[in-house]
Amino acid sequence: MGRACLINFVISFLSLTAPQSSLESAAMPTTNPTSSKSSLLLNVSITFKLSRANYRAWKRQVTALLSGIQVMGHIDGTISSQSPTIVQDGSSTPNPQYTNWFTIDQLIINLLFSAMTEADSLSFASYDTARSLWVAIEAQYANTSRSHVMSIKNQLQRCTKGDKSITNYLFSVKSLADELAVIDKSLSDDDVTLYVLNGLGAEYRDIAASIRTREHPFTFEELHSHLLAHDDYIRHEEAQINVQVSIANFAQQQCNSKQAGLLPLPSDGRGHTLSKPTPNNASFSSHG
Image (tube, rainbow, N blue to C red; front, side, top):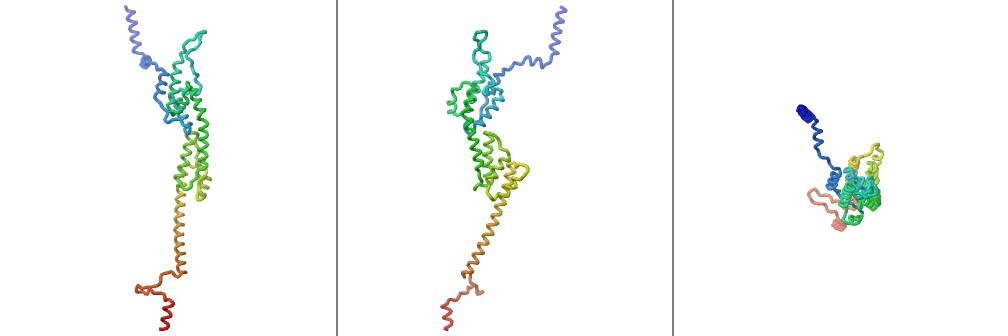
């Protein structure tokens, strides 16, 4: 009897002195990694549909998402595809890894199809693994995307200010640079500055030379500020020139009028304009 009491005492003592965290961890159910990844894949989405113009941006979003869920191996080939059965000791048995692999793989395929147009979904419908589908997408869109990149770079090289305001011109260049950053890679501040300066007219020659010789690159905001200030200076100078031209034109008109005898005749001081004698009047006065 004394021995039984001792055992009960030891058990009670251990239960009281055991760390609470150990008890909680023992009671906590184990989370299935496949179930967690499946749940994430069911609740995420790509924000835009795949197209030839946005392939690189679309690809970047897909790879970032799948990497975050830790299932990128299904499309880059680092996770091998599984067959439903395996051969062990000369006999075929169910593959214990197949169900988990197949579940994740099909959910990735579903995610990719949900980010395509209906036409693309039909075009790629025959691919039954995430890896084979991904390879097919890359084969169809990678070359097209490269030609789109070349097209944007060509537009940047040919972009000129023309009749646009300096602000509209700058933002047209920036829009192309931003598009290039999304589908390929970002341009440096110096590259953007060079594209802008190359498209300016002769009236910006002085400020362009000053910008080119600066030691540190201009940010887009600094470039915009400097060119806007120079544009205001040009407008002020043009206004001054227009005033001077108007004054010169008026003076020339006055001179031409005087030479042609078309200036206003003098007044007699009583509000009457003195008439200029005609030859007939002068003859009549002399006979009288």
